[in-house]
Amino acid sequence: MWLLRIAWRNFCYRSLSSILTTVSLALGVALVVMVLAVFGIVQEAFSRNAQVGYNLVVGPKGSALQLTLNSVYYLSQPIENLPYTEYMEFFNASERAAMVRKYGGDPKLGERDGKYAAYVSGGYAIPLALGDYLGEYRVVGTTPEFFEKLRHGPTLEEPFEFRSGRAFQAHSEENGYFEAVLGFRVARRMNLQVGETFSSTHGDPEGKGHGQGFTVVGILAPTGTPNDRAAFVNLEGFYLLENHAKPLTGEEDIVPPTDAPEDANGWTPISIPEREVTSILVRNGNPMFGPGMQNQINESVLAQAAAPVGEINKLMNAIIGPMLAALLVITLITCIVAAVGVLVAIYNSMNDRRRDIAVMRALGARRETVTGVILLESLLIAGIGAVAGWFLAHAAIWFFSEEIENRTGVQVGILTTSSYEGYIFPLVLILALVAGFLPAWSAYRTDVGSNLSA
Image (cartoon, rainbow, N blue to C red; front, side):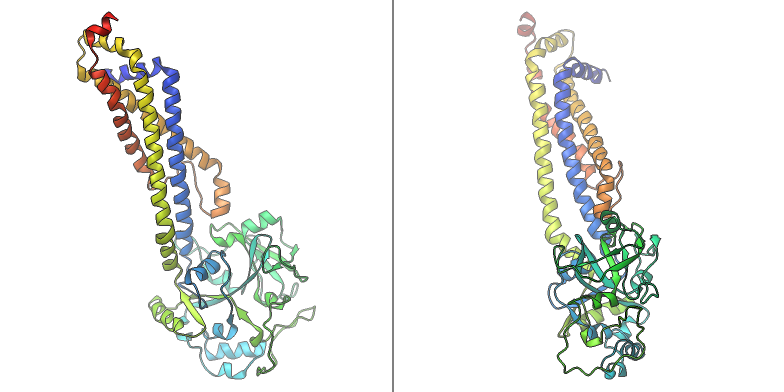
């Protein structure tokens, strides 16, 4: 214990040099911790949001990863669209016939079960239509089942809750087909409240605006998922916007609808041949049916099915994994640079303390004792710097926690740690021992007689 006391007195005696060295080391450790924390936040955001409740995303042929990013995270651009009849393949004959009566179309569509209806019995198939923006945020056309069926949270059992308002209806007496629900972040950034109206832009944030607007009837409570940064609108109203209906060729066999409600402004739903969907979120009634349905869909001419969890794992292994390796290399280099700073600081002070070391030796201290004091001083600087750097990094993370949560959906606190942070302290202490070896060796070889006479 008295060796540690001597090391501490040496630290205090050369306080300016010791503090500057410690601060330099603390900043290096803080940088390392923040880099690892950022990686952990990104990894958690992607991995947690890949657990989405539905087990398949169905869309046009193309990149399965692009389909996943577009439909689950509302990133990237839609590949293409699928005919609405592909969506109808997930329903039985009676449900398909009801769609024909409601929207108008070929009556033969209601004469048989859909190809995938048996797989989805007890589950759900929810359509998405993308292509519009509200500011920088995606506008997602979907059905009320999106809020009724989907779940989120670590156990995938938490339903959507509304900070204000309600979910939109398939057809309401007040707003007809033009109702919308905003994600928490969209409502806050766009400064929209329940009862207000917005118009989306077509194709990109700077695209042409639609004249017809949607009335906000609900604002979601924060979910920590990509749904916080999306605006959800009634699929029927989405189809009725300009350039959203597929042009007819005149060869379609369309029976007029018989069950379609007409709203106060005279809008009626477009027919089935005019409809397209960007993707379909599918949950099987029995999870064991998932691989079989996925294979059958992938064998079709138009559609493909992607498992979000599998695609995100591929993304992690292909992109995030190499990024982690690069970050760890940067971490190691930063720690080495900090250790070199410790070495230089202690070694430069050796000329000033040679007489002190000679006095210690003359009073009976062994070479090993003097060496231990120097190594303990190096470990002292490293320990204080590592702890200070860790708290500095986490204080910065806590300070920006609200912004991090808004952008990623990941909640972080001052004590939120990455699994890799545990390696930092041993690494810093080992490097400090290595850095202290040269000054300690110099102290070990100090000549008592010559330094006392000097």
